[in-house]
Length: 304
Image 1: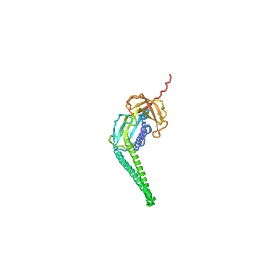
Image 2: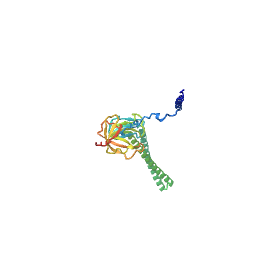
Image 3: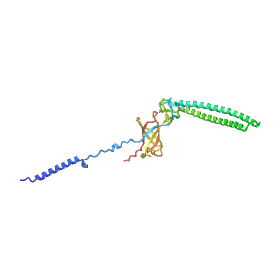
Image 4: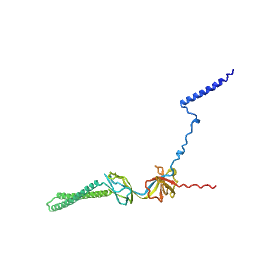
């Protein structure tokens, strides 16, 4: 009888079943699969190379003047609109000056009182001098006393002091009036330069705070201000020609670098630079952002 080979076959089947059982238990226990069975991670290199070329830039007005509120005012009357052409010294807005005018009226009234006090003190002094001379004559004639002369002399000195005090008070109030008049003139806001109104920060009739900008005037066209990252410092220098790509414009503009800061901004970690536009279009708006693209010279092709 030839049944002996059945034992090895049964052993092989049992071994396979055991291996399958172990594999099932490992999967249930969370045992990781062999490295060969884990698919490779996707290549993310392409996703990390989408950085925009060049340096971030913005159009900046060549000349600008901010008109600020010298004092807090309950309201502002704006006399211009965005885009209006203005001349140097032109009135742009007026701040509410009612409180200042009330203070000025009060100061003028106080000055009148001080001047009246001066006149009264002068009259008092003259009267005291008359009394002093009479008491001196009486003492010389033997009908007066030294005490009466001393009292009359003291009255003269008191009147003299009153005159000095009244004069000082009048001068102080005169100075105060001059200050209030200067303040009133400052409540009329004028343009520091000739140009056009670029921004109005206060609403007509709204309250404004001391030191806050009310209106901004710009003039003289625009230049390009851009920032060079620290690791790209030295890639451009004054005199270099660069391209400028502005947002919402299809054509490239040309500019020439004229200034590069000699130091790195410690906070931004950027080098600030400036470029002048060549044949700049007339419709460029300050504040427009874009990218400065350095012109990189291509390496010469090797000859065959």
